[in-house]
Structures are given as C-alpha cells and as structure tokens.
Image (cartoon, rainbow over the protein chains, first blue to last red):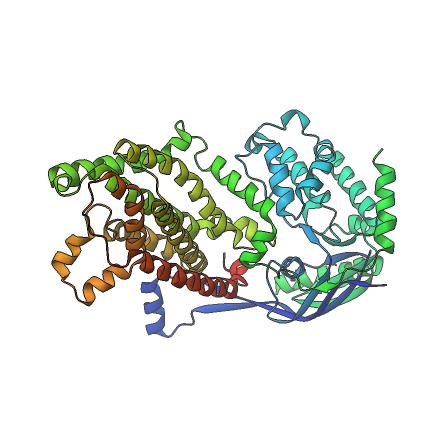
Length: 251
Length: 299
C-alpha cells in the first residue's frame, strides 16, 4: 500500500508573547522578567497513514491533536521533522471558517469550495448535490447571517464533504448538529471511506470513532502514546489517558 | 443516478497511481496566486460585495471621499490660496494626481489589513496567503476605474486630446503606483500580523503621501524652496512624484496652452522607478514568504 500521510519526528513549539506594548516591555525588561512563554505542542511525533485508511486522533484537549491536523493541512510548518502528504488535502477543521455572513448561500458555496481547492467546473458539477445535502434550497439566495446555526453548519459541512480530497481531515465537527444531520454526516463519511479516501478524524466520542475508523492514535502531551486498532485505542484512552488526565488535573 | 458514477470514481481512485508525497502548504507566492485565478476572482467579488454591506449608499462611498477631498482642495488651495491663477485648468491638474494617490492609499490601507482581517481563514485552511494583498490591489483597481473615467471626461472638457505619448505616460504612471502598492502592501500585511502598529502607521503615512506628491501644488514650488541640490533630488526620487507627474503629463498637459515644466527626464525617471519597484516586489515577496510560515500561529 502507498502511504498517504508521512509524519516524521515532528516537533512544534508555540511561543506565547503576552506582552507586546512598548511600555510594558520596558517595565518587564527592567524587572528582568521573561517576556515569552513557550508551549511544546508536539514532541517527536512520527506516524504513517496508508491510502484509504481511516484514522482517529484521540487524546485530551491540549494533547496536540489539532496542531497535528494543522501541520498535515499545511496551515503551519513543523519546527523540526517533516510532514508529507499525497494529493489534495482538505479539512473540516472548522465548518464555516470560509463562510462569509454577508454573502448568500449560493455565493458562499462557490467561494468556500474554491477556497478548499475546487475548480470552477467541479463546483458547477457538484453544486446541486451540495445544496441538496445541506438542505438549504429555499434559502439559497438568503444571506448566510440569517441562517440558523444548524443550517450554517450543514452548508459548511456539505461544501467540505463534496470537495473529495485525497486526504480528508475532520476536527470535532461531528459533535455538533441535530441527530438527523449527524446521521447524514456519518453516512457521508462512511461513503468517503468506502471510496478509498484517507480520513483523519479528531473527536472525543469514542463510540462514534469506533464506527468510523479502523485505527486509533492516542496523543498525550504532544507525544504518541498509543497507535493501533481503534477498539484497543479506545480502551487505552478509557484506561489511561482519561483517568490520568483527571488525576493530573486534580494534582 | 449519481451512485454509479461515484462507485466508478472509487474504483479508479483505489487503483490509480499513488499521488506523490509533498510537503503541504508549499507552492504559494505570487505565482501560486496566479495559478488559482478563479479563487482570486471570487475573493475580489466578495470584497466588493461585502465592503459596503449594510450601508445605504454602498459603493458610492468610494467616490464620496475623493469627491469631498477634491472639493476641499479646490476651494482651499485652488481658490483661497490662489493656485488656480498659477496653474491652468487647476481642477484637471488636481484630479489627475488625486486619482492616483487615492488609488495608492486605498490599496496600501486595505492590503495592510488584508491578512489580519482574514485570520479565521488563514488559521484553518491553507491558501497562498499572497492572495489577500493581491485581492486588495485588484479591488482598488476596480474602484480606480470609474474615477479614471471621470478624469477623462474632465480632461475632455478642458480640451484634452489623446496621444501616444499621453497613453504611454498614463500606463507607466499606473504601473508605478500599482507595483509599488503591491510591494508595500505585501510587506505591511506581513508586518501587521506581528505588530498591529503597522495599520496605524499606514493611516499616518496617508497624510504624508497626500502632501508629498505634487498633486495640489506644482513641483516647482518645492524647487523654489529647496534649490537644485540633494534635497530636491530626494524629493524627486519618490516614485509617486514621478507617477503623478506622468499622469498630469497624460491628462492635464494636452489641454493647456503648454509651457509647464515637468521634472527633468520624466520618462527615464519613470522607467527607472518601475525597475526599482519590481526589484522591491521581489524583496517583499521573499520577506513575506519567510514570515508567512508563522502567520497561522501568530494570529
């Protein structure tokens, strides 16, 4: 099998620069206080995802899941190590990031699909499918700011899911929406999986991940602590991470 | 109906040759922007639609500001200070410089803010980030066009006739301003991500730019004060001075009785400026792409 994503000993550190104003900087400098604060988001992460695999990224908040997705999508580069991806990457990293409230549903479909890398011809071909899946036909020429939050999410999801990228990144969005919408999302993701797209899904709902993924990778404080079958990974999370996370917090 | 096709696509996909592994988030730059012209077009259209959303006058606002500015300069500088007596067809003289300077300042302002304004997108999806300053430049061009039409009508009324020299001068003047706008727009957009001071700096620079180009007064007034020395040369080295003079040469001069003295070697100056600015665009692109990798985490 050919690899779809290769992450090789990747580290990523964020510098939080809280103090920015000149007068504050001077005061702090005089007092000799440290001006920066760093967070190690990822530390020596290596993984390889084969084409057509469906992988769950698991772990507590702040374990580095979203950072890893951002590195895979190319939004930011790693500090050290390398990330390589085969084909077009698109993600549901935040439904609606590309939606503009002052544009109509129709205008947003074109804009958002183009942002996610679709060509004009592809968008025209899939337009009706996108509208039907989102279920917004009546409001197609209404500005998106008047949409209910459910419609807004459906529209964002529908556009993203129709971009048919080789690698599809899904971050947390499956937790939102009402049950019928979640069911249709699931069905669509299963369909993508069957078609042989590579999927990387971040979520906290292990039951759902069990249905959608074959493999689970558990991150803890920026390191891969478990990588294996989805059921084993879910069990690992239940036994170790969740409990330790809680006890860490108590401590 | 769609099912068979998707299944067919699925079989093709699984048996197709594996796409080559590449680092994600590469292939940006101004070249990358050109490769995604369709997206650029949509972004420009979005910007034009959204900018005056919710205002009654809409697009008209982009003409009200220059119109008011024109009125103020015309009355204060033209009538009260008497520039109208020193410069023939003063309104045309004034307006031919004003459209260019206004174009530059508008582009400078919006390009500088373009990256920060689109931060929610930049943090989530990879796009060639140069897309945003380039879109700002194109939006400014769209606003510039009708003003150019008004300028032409005014010039015609003052007895202007088209000529190859005039056409050359206007094209050169326009490209000087557009490319300079591209270069400073890229630089300031990137710096503004790290220090929001830059959008304030641009506001302040707007005042300096307005008065440093010879659009309200003749450049000879500067020569009268500075003499022929290095001070004047420094003043004339400003590409905006050259561009404004070129526009006056193109749109104002033909309608006058002549005799106005432009800065020496105006066209040579213009070509040299354009060359230097193109180099600056290269430098700006280089710095932009260096800083680019930190955009997503800094905003």
